[in-house]
Amino acid sequence: MSEFKLTTVEEFEAATERLLETGAKVGADSWQLRVKNQTPHCKFGESGVCCRICSMGPCRITKKAPRGICGCDVHGIVGRNYLRFTAGGSATHSDHGREIAHTLHEAAADGNYKVKDPEKLLRLAAEFGVETEGRDIYDVAHEVAEAGLMEYGKPFGYQVFTKRAPEHTQEIWDREEIRPRAIDREVSCALHMTHMGCSSKPEALIRQSLRAGLSDGWGGSMMGTEFSDVLFGTPREVETEANLGVMVAENVNIVVHGHDPSLSEMICEYADSKEMIDYAKSMGAQGITVSGVCCTSNEVAMRRGIPMAGNFLQQENVVLTGACEAIVVDVQCIFPALGPLSKCFHTKFITTSPVAQMPDSDFIRFNAKTAGENAKQIVKMAIENFKNRKPELVHIPDMKQKAVVGYSVEQIEKKLDGVTNTHVDETGTMMPLVDCVKAGVLRGAVAMVGCNNPKVRPDAAHIELMKKLIANDIILVVSGCSAQAAAKAGLMDKRAKDLCGAGLKRVCELVDIPPVLHMGSCVDISRMMVLAARIAKDSGWNISQIPLVGCAPEWMSEKAVSIGNYVVGTGIDTYLGVEPYAYGSEEVDGLLKGGLTDWVEACYTVEHDIDKLGDMMIERIEEKRTALGI
Ligand code: MSK
Image (cartoon, rainbow, N blue to C red; front, side, top):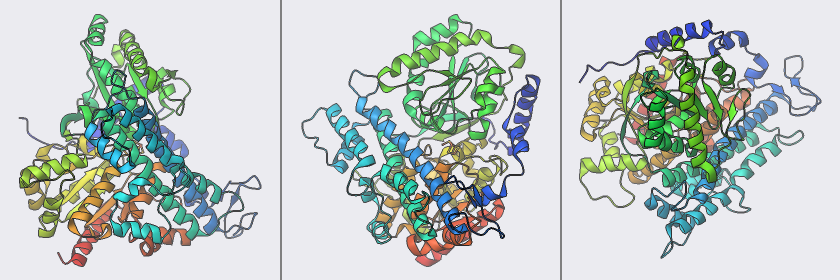
């Protein structure tokens, strides 16, 4: 086995520089150039003090003009903007979950989509009160899907999955009136509250931000995760590779990008068929390589071991290799820049969702009924495009790392069971993990998630923080683009145990895991909520007492704010490396960075110095340990 060495951020950057040289040759634009054009950013927008909710404005709050035309002060304006930002994220995640529910409703024994995890389906049926005795599994699947869809618009009651939380958390949600009702209602209510002439009280706006976030994390996102597991299988430990070097120059390269696994699963299925591989060979290629970007990549990596070409700010790089026959996208986090960029190369930019339509793309409308035909058409298009490559533009950076991924809650339980050899009932136990924390072998855990953002040196914050935390015996559970940063660096290679403190190293060896556990895509942060709930129940601690914090050092999207709100709303202190657009109001800023603790026992900390951010998380974990007397 070759010697293990992490890939450095400097090496990532050198590879990108080389690709940008190709880009310059063909007149391609890039995010690096666009950032320069957009800097400095508008301070009104950045601090959240610009209101364009009605057409009397836009109003911008300054010392000279302390109120908008309607009389709203800076706190109301910033609070409204924050709530709208959250609602955007919550709607987006939840609509993803809804799509998966519709796909489950289409599942059939002889159809495009089948039930791959019937045990999980039966567990969900029990939660939704769906009868299973003597019924066909597909009848059950359709009724569970319908029950899930009802969670979006039901007129009464609360999100079913909130019952998964410990009693104490549920009591807080009820006391603070933030237990989420129907998912769509929380988004609509957010838009209603922020309409001209409605709420301008920061407390009310931030309270609804938490509730809209919780409707995502304990509603739409959780549904997205659970129903995807039923359809495509619950992730299990699997080996894969990460970084641009996973693309193969001799093969037809298809890159899947976005979030919804319904399309990418089908593409993987067809790209792996003998018919398509033979067709690729007949066109002069040696085979077909499917790799991924962003969370679609995480989905297929976790379930099939499909390699990860890169994360958010690497999406243009896959085209710049000159070896990408097709970049196929579904929804979310897709740069419209891919359209014009792909025109500089032979790459087909294929959009597939009515939700994410973009200029300069080939639109192949994808839906569950025609999924097989759609996927086949896309794979064929990519194969037929191989001959159009310009060999002089092809350069794939020789850079990749091995990674072990697939740590669903179920897989973590199984791993722990393997260590203890104790009897585990159907819900498993987290006690071995809790015992390690109590004994101090593990100091605690950090849930690191989120994007890249050009405001932070890409990937550096994720990777440096992870290295620091594992050296301090803090285990990481990660998702989204944070997970891909870790995989690209090599932190998901089991040999990364050698970078850990003695305690975590021992745990990695005993349990046979890497120190950074890939839990999936953005919607899969719901897995982390379930994990926290299970640890709380098994340990007898409240979630807010667990030596655990959340972190999004390079976040950028509305979804990330929605996530932050449900993580904090669940009682987990959350550390950010990028400031939300809220610092223009002392009241809103004060609530987010402290006041929320009185409501939900957790709040945000924002720190731009990444090393300090790491120190603060370690300090908070140690404070929690001291408070527990461990
Ligand atoms: S893809 S939301 S850039 S994590 Fe889920 Fe990555 Fe952030 Fe998109």
